[in-house]
Each structure stands twice: as structure tokens, then as C-alpha cells.
Image (cartoon, rainbow, N blue to C red; front, side):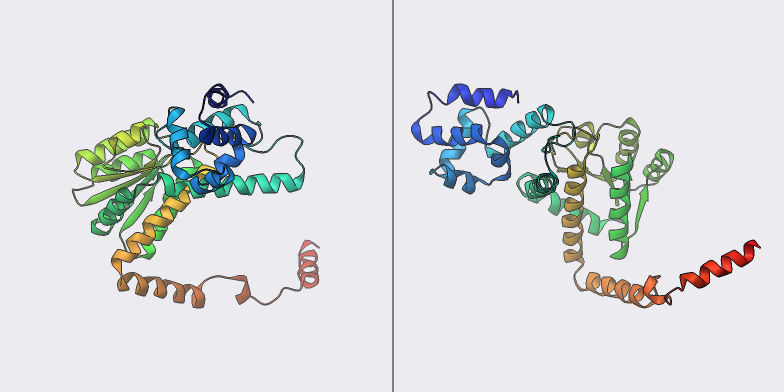
Length: 303
């Protein structure tokens, strides 16, 4: 694997102090394991301390372990397998299962280090106060997220819509007022049609919450940024790990919204659950089918 990050480590290890040299050696030995570890775990394996790990990252030119991990993960994604960021062509089924699950776990665990507490609190506060929350997205993955967000808010009794069509997004944006909230979801954060709808909504005084990567055009236009970075997927434009991370953020935001609504949210959710459990369409409500009888009836109709 060719990596500028690893090359920088290899160059620095010879002149590094002994305490930091052990940290650098572990990174070179198994960079993927380092991506999966916390500050404490890496320090313990190196026989060192968390401050020493932090100083090691700063020596390499990164503000902290999180920034170092992001740089390392990006380079490993680019230089890794074309199948998956972790899986190689020669891996057996057990290795594939393990690596895919570890990748998903690491991605979700990384949310805590990246997500701003102030931003999610501001997002929840804005949603609770909103007269209407309209969810916008572009693309298959983000469109599912927008629909899921809308359904969660709707179950809580809030006025919410999901608009996936660019023309309807513009209509929605044009009818927003100062009490309205747009929840825009885009991993890439640069689709012109979505940016245009966001611009229109802001011109109407609406609050824009963006679930995207920091530094994107969408993030620059948002009032509240739920900034999450996931290393590029070698196969899909927006990979499974980004999908899982966005779902995690949506779960966090909606739980915070429910907390703010308090007993009202509990009552609403309980009512929805009761209705679905007694009136929802489910296979358990139907008698077991006798497939021989079904086949006989079908054959008789064909005669």
C-alpha cells in the first residue's frame, strides 16, 4: 500500500523520542487496527499514555488523533481493494464478514468524535420550535434518509414533509417562512438543484439544517451543520458506511427532539404503536395458506 501518511511516519520514526517511537511503530505495523482503536487502546498497546499519542499526532502535522485517523483512512480507502475498503480478493468468507462488520462499527463509532454537541442541540431546538420541517435530498441513499427523517418527525406529531423531486423542493422552499426548517441531507453536499432549493428557503427566512460533510457547498449555506466525514467508498459513490453514519445522526437528532417534547412524545409514540399492533397489516393476521389448494384453484381457472 502506497500512503503518504505511512511514508511520513516511516521517515519520522528514526528521530522520534522513545515514547513516541513505539506509537509510530504500531501504526506502521497495522494501520487498520489503529483506525479501529481509541486513544486509550492505542496508548495501552504502546505502553504509553494518551498525551503521548496526542503529541505523536501533532508531530506528524495533525491537531489530534481524529484528524490523523481521517487522513490515514482516506489514503487507505484510495489505495485499498476495489471491492471494499477492507476486504481483499483473496479473503475467505469469515474474513469478509469480520472486515465488513468492523468497517461498519468503526464508522458508527466515529460519529461521537465528529458530531458537534452544540450543533445537534441547536438542530433539535430548531425542529421543536418549527412550524414545519421539510426534508430535502438528492440521490437514492439520501432520499431514503429524508423519508426516514420525515416519518420519525411525523410519528412525534410534528408537521413534516419529505421532498425528493427538485421542483417540489423549490415549491416547498418558496412557501417557507421564518418559523420553517429545512433538513437537507447530502453526503457529497454539492448538488446544484439541492443548493438552489436551500438558497430559496434561506431567502424566505427559514432555518437550514444540513447533514453533510464539513466544508461542502451545502455546509457553507446551512445555519446548522451536522458535519460527518466518512472515507470514500471504493465501489459506491455514497457507500454503506456513510448510510449507517447518517442513520445514526438522524436517530440522535430525533431522540433529542423527543426528549424536548417530553410526555407528549411518549404519548404520541405509544398511540402509534398501539394502532399498528392492533390494526396494522401483518402476515400473522392471515390464516396459513394451503398451497396445494391454491395451485388446484389456479389450474382450474386455466382450463
